[in-house]
Length: 343
Image 1 (tube, rainbow, N blue to C red):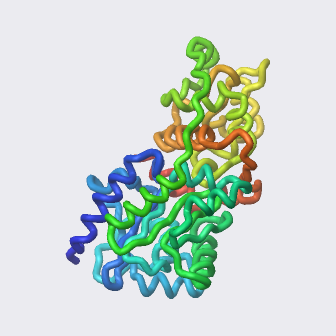
Image 2 (image 1 turned 120 degrees about the vertical axis):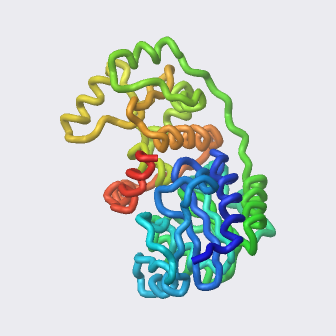
């Protein structure tokens, strides 16, 4: 079946957004457009940045998706008359289906996340978004639980902007350009200046990594997670949002003063656990496993972008351990990890 022209607009907008690491990282974020009874939505595990060079959008039956949501069913039926795809629809497809807007854009904006992980400063946050049709929601597990929470919220009052606690930003608009512009406006209102901290101790990092399965993080910004004691405390304190858990594991481990990377990996193996994806070495910098994929690298940068934007006196709300485990044991996220690894 012929694809609608508006899908090309969605591709162009998605690619622009996907190439901005302040908005999306790796396979995070998703976008959609409604055309008749077809919901064109990003496939799970694909990257928005690839929207113009890969076929990343799937046709879903809009009425079927809404009926499934009403029954509490996460299965999203494919649109009739379209060629079947081996890809799965985004885990947030039900969220895209329930929103009435023709275009929906969901991003993991680092500025929005830096506000959404705080349980203080709510008055300042509300003031910054004054005048926008907006809802702020607490954290909900991605997929159906989040969609159900959004549905209940929108039933109380329509909104064009959703701030998702410990997760990100969703906007709905009439066109792709309008959705992108609305994200830009929210970003401008919520912009936080990052704190500049001490740079990596390159020589010490190289020595710590020698003969191990680790190497210094590629992005110099990542080292600020370890060279600044405040950043270090935040990073090892817990997980701030879902994709961190998926691509890096819960929180981030720190290397003790008398500990080696080999010993830390060995202890993980003894516990029948994989070696940590990344490790913070105080006063030296961040290291990442040599076999880490692009997703892990992107999410390590994302963490640095978020943490350096948090005020020193911010009251931070981490994901509880049971929420972390729900993400780690979720087949939908293991599937997304696999696709990212094969990108």
